[in-house]
Image (cartoon, rainbow, N blue to C red; front, side, top):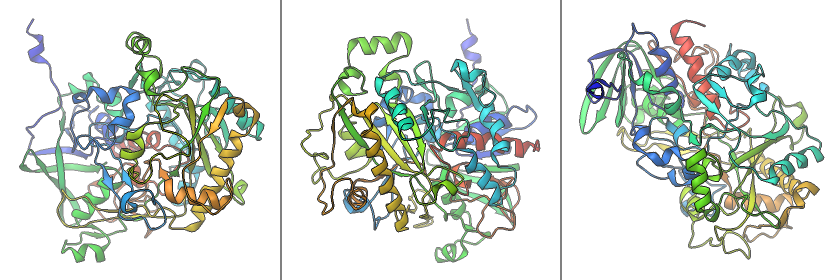
Length: 580
């Protein structure tokens, strides 16, 4: 009866003076790495996370709560960009919000749980750019290793995994629009396919990181109760890393702040930086690793002159909502989600709209000039089971100025009980590049983040082509049969509706991004001056330190980035262990 006194949790506020491995950032990659390294009982592993434990927030587990998690500063970094010169016209100061998870599981604890790997051409291109050993055939085993797919036909498919830490499942509620969406893609010349098989283009049912109606973050999947009992694993939450300590060119320790107390711990083997595209860049810059010119302006001693904070990329997007005339109870909205029958269905079976973020399916297409010559699709179109998402999403998450932009749509009150669906066209491979730079040497001050949306004007043109194509999709017979009205943004444009110039005006004003920033610690060949890390994820010219998260992507993948971050964590662990 005293067994509860013997329960051990890796989460602690007391730390040893040194560890074999220190993993900075308990996010989508960091949780994976901490698990895999601590499989060896002969090494000690410390995982440091700036936010709280994932177990401290029950709402994080409920998929339909996703919109309410963003801009909650207890679990979201809630970064803000600098003024965007060519976008975000509907936001005060033309500033974009940038949600990033600040909780065990990182952004996998606050994202929409969409499971998209990207296509074969993404990873083959990484290898061509100098990331040897990161082609599709080399990374596929790590996708498979991480996956526990519950779809019966996928369980027999060699490109999918069974028994991995992250459970992947089909959407928990259905609507006739799913089948119509896929048929619409077929009508326009694309095939129905498994969108996670490495294919370049096609339409197919989506999958989510959801298990028995609950979110499957990397904290849930990789920091299980049995893992948390490992005596060689320690996890510090609410630990803000101030800098990495170097002796010459070797990383030897970490300084961090917890509950007002400063800690300085040493590392015997390696430090693995998994703080994310913004966090990893900021920590390296504070530690003297970055562009020398920028560091010297802040009187930070230069350890390594490398392009940290450059090469930032993201996916631009927008919501295109249609109201339906023939569907009832098939929409994730407030009315349907709060029905007693819906709540009981969720509590008893883990099914229904509450067990979903709203994501249902995706199509991958090519719409730009010479797109057939590209190794990847240039447009992704998500299907979501939302109509009007709600004020919180538009005016809090996206930070649109409600005083000037309510309602968003012509002749629509934005009532949250409307039945419908939403397409989200996404520009997959922007040419624009952004930056992350320090404002000061204070680790508690957010860096200057400039995503530089549409900095290259071709991106705006390509995005407009994507909107025009998505509108064409809505006009196909399969989707048109459901639609009562395609909502139009309330925007003053001199251009004809559904023209390229009209859609450019819409994107400049109401365009958003998918919260998929990558690339600030670019991976490349060891002699590539534009790279920060080599293909083994070691920082060029330094010892005892690697980076493993979305920041290492040389170019962004064709789809949601979380699955790729989990893969990066799995592959990084094998590099560190010397298995590859």
